[in-house]
Image 1 (spheres, rainbow, N blue to C red):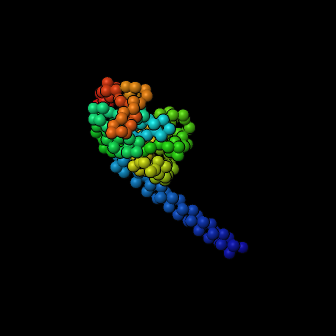
Image 2: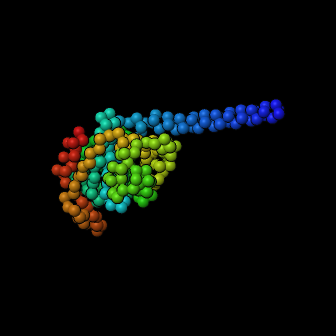
Image 3: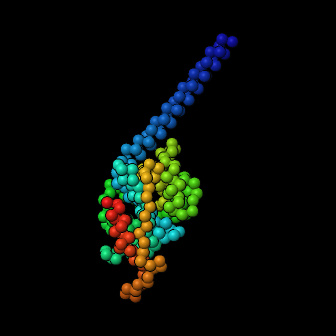
Length: 226
């Protein structure tokens, strides 16, 4: 009997040790991901710009955060947008260049900037994280009540990869978006076009559809962002 009790105690001891080791390993694993995100340049950046192209509507959205002042802005642009003073068109196939056009237009300085094309797969992810909503801005508003959850640190890179291939989003950059949407007072503005429908321009036998941006609308938003 005594041997059996001793054997049972021994088994319980090793099981307890195994459970403790598993818990410690999991804690170390999570802490590593947490620190990688929180110590990244993306997460520590103060002024951060995100450019999103909504594939379903053709609209562009600049989401800008200033972490130190807890301010956040959503700026909407029409499809086929064209900025006449610099003769630059917004290009869904070159969002990096489009982001540069927008930042130059609005006179914005930043510590980090990211861009992504939002298709059905990315919309599904955003809807699942924040609760399904119709419209890109509505989805962002839903995400503002969420913040960053425990397991998001482990899934950060998987989230970012959902936007591929037309993106430079990283895992930490995506979690920064979730964090700032939750912590910032968001304001939405729209930079309107001079026309509701695109104007067809023909250059060297090639036709281009353009919605020229209203300069007064650009200046109004530019003054607000200063």
